[in-house]
Length: 202
Image: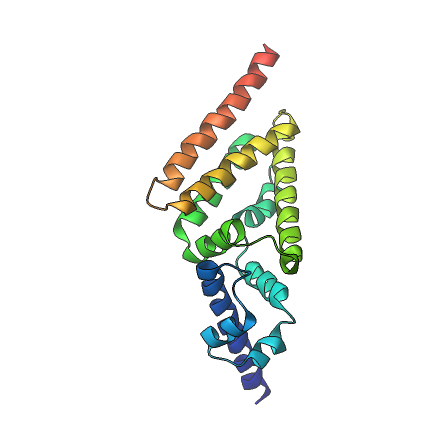
């Protein structure tokens, strides 16, 4: 009986998170209330409050279900020290692009994080988490570049290129091939950085 109760509670929590994901994408976060989410999920508002104290906590739980590409790649990028750090970095960046291009839930969550989080006080914790994730991702790229003998400051350019590509693609998903265009852009940037290093060595 206890197992069934836990399973039912988890099913309700999942339904709430699924509903929030759909509504945040369609309406924006600030214009979506907990009552909207309860109606969409087919549960009472009390059920929503049973699982989440407020909208910010619900939003954070939704984001944690599907790690953003920059967060997912961060742990893997810690493997950059060693053989061919730039080749490893390239592979991880392309994997990020492929994840966004092919996974619909990742697309929704990334769309919400980039375009649907309005600047309002109730979402300050959400913005803080996103800023921390970006800072950590840039720092990890910087370490990869340093292992390749490149300046850590170039990490901003690498991060900006990949996130900019994903953001542009999400605005109009049929406008270009994210993986093909992204791979070419990543190669051009990394080759340029490598060439600059070679020129200095020469």
